[in-house]
Image (tube, helix red, strand yellow):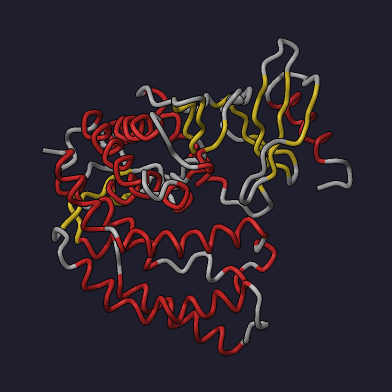
Length: 346
C-alpha cells in the first residue's frame, strides 16, 4: 500500500468500486484482524467499511459474507452488504481490500454482559439463526460424537505442546505470560476431572452450519433488542449447543451476573427452543456443561504471548482472567444450572 493515509485510499476505492463519493471517512470500531472505517454518503447514510490485511484469504471472506446474507434473507438481523458495481462483496485496489455494509446506529456490543430481557432476545435470535442455517447448502444438521464438541484428548495435546514451548521460552516472572504458563499447567492437570464431568453428557450432539464466531463483540444490542449479528465465519459444522452456550454464558456475563446467570441462561434457552424446536432437548440440556467443557479445553488466550505478542493488550489480559474465573464458576454450579434448565424445558 502507498504511503498515503489509508482513509484517503478508502475514499478512493469507495468512489471507484461503489460509485459513491463519501462526504467523510473516519476511524470505526476496532476489529480483531481488520482496520475499520465509517463512511457517510451524500444522503446521510453511514456505511461500515472493513479493510483486510495483506494475505487475507479473500475466498473465505466472501463465503463468510455470503453466510451472513443467507441469514439476513431468512429474517435474522444482519447488516446489509453493499455490493460493488461489478456485483462483488469485496473490492480491491492494489493491496487494499474492503467490504462495505450498512452501519448499525445507536447500538452497543454485548461485551458488557447480558441482563433483563436481553437473555431471551439473544436466545430467540440464535434460535432463528440456527433454524435458518439448518437449510444452508453446506449441509443439514447431523449428530456427531460429543468428544468432537469438547475434545479433551486434543486439549491435552495442545496444552502439552504449549507447556513445552513455555519451557523453551521461560516467561518473565510476574507478568501475564507467567500467568498463562501457570494456568496452562493447572488446566492440563485438571483435564481428567473435566473428562469425568463430561461423561454424563449424551453420546452425540447436533452439529450444523453456525455463525462460527458468536462472541459478545459480534452481537450488537439496542436496548433489550438484538440490533444485529456481525462478523460471520465461513460456513462450517459445529455444535449448536456450543454456539448457544458460547454467547449466553460468555465469561463476562457470568462474572457480571453471579446470581443471575443461571435464570438468565434458562430464559435464553427457553426462547431458543421456541424459535428452533427442531434441536433435540438433549442438546439444550447440555448447554451449560458444553460451555464449561469448552472453556476448560481451550488454550486461548494462554498461547497468545507466544503466538502473537502484539495481541496481548490489557483488554486481552482481562479477558483471559475472566475466562479462567468463569470456567471455575460454571463447573462449581453445573448441577444447579442443569436442574433449573430441566425445570424450564419441561
